[in-house]
Length: 268
Image (cartoon, rainbow, N blue to C red):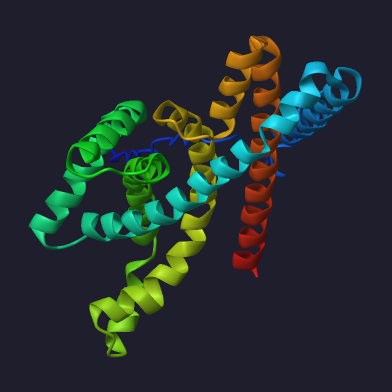
């Protein structure tokens, strides 16, 4: 008598690779060591340039602080607006209404299929044909529209990761769908959503370098202005690269600490 063999299919391996910074997690000792080496090395390079190569590096460093401020302004404003767009898009992607679902899904596919640089040009000049929009506002709108599509998928994944039993329990207590989503699903999904949002924040900060083409006086734009006046392109972009690297490494460490704290809180 032949016995039937039961073949169990293994779940496919999911490779999670984003376009943000590498987050130094305590479980990855190599990445943590690499972060320390990179951060200490970048700080030492910056200190060396400012102390022993004051001309022109100190002049460059004094020239770009307002550009750093503008970079953070664009990043923070864009990420806040992108979160709002992402929440609406994520809810639309899981909506039972086929028309709302279609609109949200189409938005995600179209925006994610067009390069950010093209979107910056398109939105800036498209809005310019209707109404004059300041460069900074156009940059924020462009970045928000682009990253809103990615945030929409983050929200969708976070919401769908919550067990159905949570929703059923809330409905059995008399909550309607909106109350269930607001009081039960979203607070739990936020713990899952927050780490990738931090990663997208870092990726957005780096992508703000593209808004310099619109005339926004961000970090890269200020560096280009100094280089065009002094013709010291190598020195200028070396300083800009080091500053970007230090900022990104600091933010990636903060995201790492946030993830570890959330993980520790969930385990408790």
